Length: 101
Image (tube, rainbow, N blue to C red; front, side, top):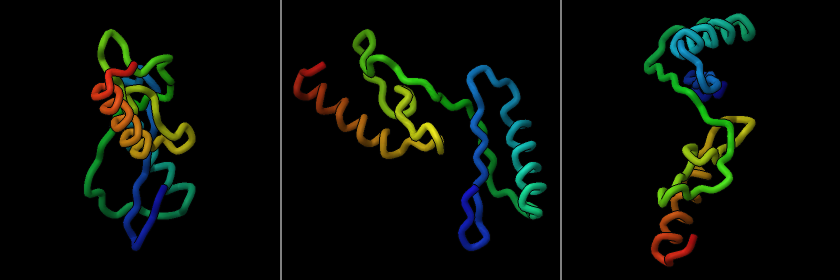
């Protein structure tokens, strides 16, 4: 839960195999309202997805490079991974250009 000037983001991380991610997000919003004694008045955007929390042993498999969350590179506590996505994308590009594995 991140709030700034009345705008907040609620994140619900769903384990692999989760079927009803939209319902889990709805329940997460409801729970935040209960815990914080607040009312979510308006929702501009809803998005739900499964998040990977595992790591690959290698980020190159059968000639394909995996970067960011596809390779399991993310903050395991918060579930965010933009820094890892940029860094692993850069390293994959360098590996391709320089012919490294």
